[in-house]
Image (cartoon, rainbow over all chains, first blue to last red; front, side):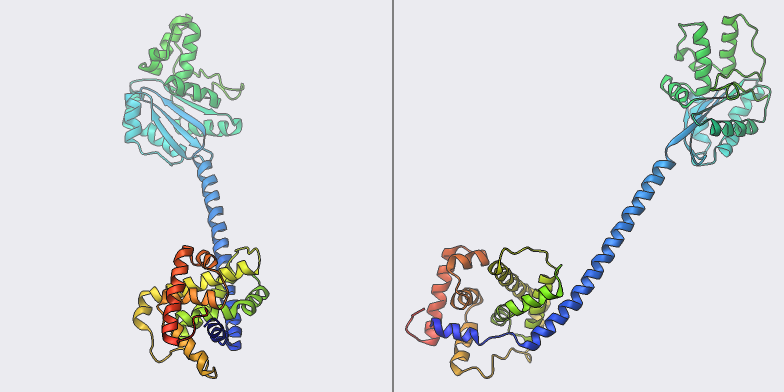
Amino acid sequence: MHDRLHNAFSALRAEEDLKSKTLDAVARRAGRQRARRRRMRALACAAACLLLVLGLGGGLFFTPVSAISLDINPSVMLTVNRFDRVIGIEGYNDGGRELARSTPVLFADYSQALTALLASAAVQDCLERGEALSIFVACDDEQRSQEILANVESCAGGGRNVHCQSGGWAEGSAAREAGLSCGKYRAFLELQALDPDATPEDVQGLTMREIREKIAALSGEPAPTPGQGHGKGHGAHHGGQGCS
Amino acid sequence: MRSEQETARAIELHADTVRRLCLIHLKNQADSEDVFQNVFLKYALSSAVFENEEHEKAWFIRVTINACRDLLRSFFRSRTVPLDDLIDLPAQAPPDTREVLDAVLALPEKYRDPVYLHYYEGYTAPDIGRILHKNANTVYSLLARAKKLLRESLGGDGDA
């Protein structure tokens, strides 16, 4: 039976025609598969590049390079990216939080954001009461800092009670750690130099005018007239430039 | 992926084995040719590395049997086998060959692979067990039962 089975199976052969048809079909289908795989690889590469670009772009977009703090009684701070877009707004007291909530400035150009904030009823009421408005620009790039400061001064309109100053990014970070906006933090540093017991909490609830009055009282100098700058920014040209 | 030359070499070397396995599983000419082509396409696209020709041959046997089973299990095929396209066994084959092949094809499917692999390819029961992923004892049993059935249909002296 073994031989009979072996001989019977031997009679079954793959026809030459089938072999050549198969070789053609395999070459054709394998070529298509290869092309599809190449396309898939190209697509995967393109997707990876796109993700990389989006990731880098997103990373750049959401990286803050400067901060603008606005202190009057509401105290808010805007963080701004390299494209001059506001990527964050934070209130540092109840008034500031309410102002941040009621003024939609996220992703707006910082000049427009600042104009909107200054035009808000809360800020206008304070200005009418004669409160001092302090705007502080924190940025490590001196040229950008100057540009922003010039724009900020233009937005603020140079009122008598408006102080515009600039400083380094580190100062902005230190201010955030102390729970104060940049403008208020700088005023706090001046106060602390005269009164080492002063704490950020002591100035948190005070208006800028009240802090200035405290500083004047401790230093024995007359209270600064509105519109006089107090900045100690990086560089003579850079710091302490009053708007009015 | 393999070159066309590699595929051509594999076809020359393994076409008969693949064809025989297709014939003992599939009764339809078109299905048989489809599986035949698919097996070599799979080889062309595969990056499997073979230690030697025997290893490669075992791969072809395994892949062909799986492809035949997949086709037989497929929902559509189970309902759409055309009856007018049945495989013709070699027309010029001697009467004895046709009788033996008919007897093999009449066996339940589970016996056909062990019979072919043992009586034609010369594999031992443990080898067949490895290729078909079956226990060697199971293969011994399958071969014994298949031999009994073939003896009943073909007669003979039981020399297998």
